Image 1 (cartoon, helix red, strand yellow):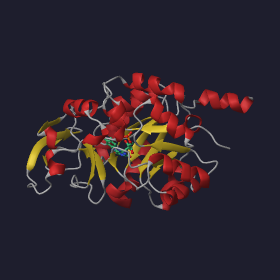
Image 2 (cartoon, rainbow, N blue to C red; image 1 turned 120 degrees about the vertical axis):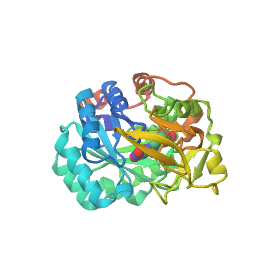
Image 3 (spheres, rainbow, N blue to C red; image 1 turned 60 degrees about the vertical axis):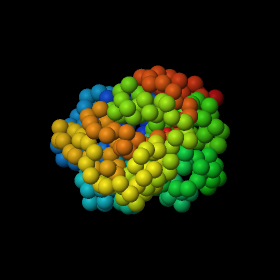
Length: 328
Ligand SMILES: Cc1cc2nc3c(=O)[nH]c(=O)nc-3n(C[C@H](O)[C@H](O)[C@H](O)COP(=O)(O)O)c2cc1C
């Protein structure tokens, strides 16, 4: 039997906020969860005390379901194991694990054995089928998406193909969803909910640099490009970003163009770094990786996370609606 993602995760609105390294801290994730959807922090390369500090802020900020996003291909299987162990040890069961791309098979069993939900973002039918068969919520990412791209299909092509193969699985659509109308299309294609990234970059609670936020609100889809230039720290995967002087001229030197602070530690930022500019970044922000989906077409103002959730809620299946259908 098909269920909305709200019913599966135990939230009210079938809306997932994407974990976004640097941008999605505990403040954003908790604001989204406290508004009735499913928030998520971007764990990216955090480990040890830095990850613990983020997990503490997350669990202090909400007692509702909320996620921690990790990226298997960035950290590799051993580090991923350590990150997952920390999440499972240091958070209550209301915290779910979100992964960008497929992990090794053991990860599915380990997260399930801890009684946690696993949400896996995929870009192909084969990966979606594998993730669903192992009990995960499947996020189907289309090439409209901001950030790194897992496949080559458009969002609704992938959702439709996955729904054909997986009539009962919980499938969430991602990529290019900037308005309730976009969300309606994804639900009509067979999704049980939606995941939004770019729409939450411009949330008041997001840690995106103010320049990045205003660039997203001013942009249209034609200002984005699929590139592979921002590869320092995450090589070998195409990403959709706002076009910059760096995407236009990738032959520039790899010198430092700024500095940034992550969990109290300061780092120099080289040109071509995969790291997004945050409110703790200074330097040539306009040359940094500003991931942005075609969804920016419909995003023109900054708003609170609660406002964004409230705007989408009416077109999305809610947990209450599913409960009603079951009774009826
Ligand atoms: C600024 C930014 C950073 C992102 N970082 C991550 C990340 O760390 N982990 C992840 O799973 N997905 C990440 N994504 C991709 C999203 O999960 C998702 O595929 C995408 O945002 C959906 O398209 P949309 O941006 O048009 O909503 C990021 C997206 C953006 C815009």
